[in-house]
Image (cartoon, rainbow, N blue to C red; front, side, top):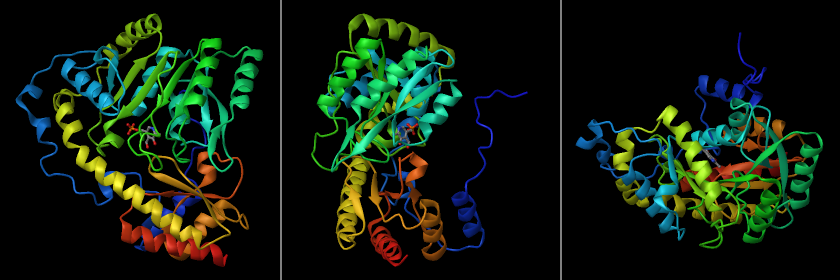
Length: 392
Ligand SMILES: Cc1ncc(COP(=O)(O)O)c(C=O)c1O
């Protein structure tokens, strides 16, 4: 009766079951997987969401790409980061996840292939599944710093072509979740050259672009000569995932951009999924939300410093230093499986971390640590975590 887009056997994993049991037993949990900024103790201005209730929001003026003022507000936000993006090239969506879905509909027939980074966060594969798109991974490698396995990416395209599968797009997540790796300008140019060679589009997920952890402008993706879709949204840019506004900025050769926009118009017009209140409020939310962005930025930078200091006391462990984003990855001795390790940490210390295999790390043992928790909680949790790992 049902489609095969939802994978069979997507039951709950052992960590989810252990977590549920611990919650039921009323035992404490320190969540080092936290990704929800609204639960991280930031001081949201009480009137931040007042613009959603403007009188204008009572009227409905359907516009496939979004209301002009909202698209202008997003263009201004690109400009804040030093990126020139015309409002006419901006498509509003309800979220970044939805933006992916619109792009898969634009670019892919069922069974077509998109290249995705590995390790990366699992949401992309759920999104491709739901649009009946296949993924071929390309590697991100860590040799003191993260880089794209460019040869592997090329081989993946060649392999797919040899198998007569059509590759349509390359997904780049920069900064990536969870590695915190940023696509370097030279890598962006090399990927764009591959895209031009094979008529591929680039889907550049930049939701964490506002959170550089090393150099201030390190996260900016350069303009390249290939059809490029830049994805972002309020959920990370101003810490408002519940408000539901994302966007696609379309760049690259003018004729391709035009073709893409006219097709995207049909897709967006079919759903018209972005609410009017969020569109009339977009300019205010992007402007006033800067205070949340600043708090998040200070938090993740501070917690990364704390993590570096604690990790330095445990020479058997090493941090794969992130260049941007909200997460850090620690490599720890693989004396037991990642699954046993994270279950043990939860049971013995009440600390919840994600194992590397959730994100398709090629080997063990890696732990993914969120940098969002409140500093006091974070500090004691990482001290305990590294202490526990040292003991096992
Ligand atoms: C890299 C990345 N892209 C996109 C998303 C989804 O963002 P949104 O809430 O706008 O759908 C997430 C969510 O955590 C993410 O980590």
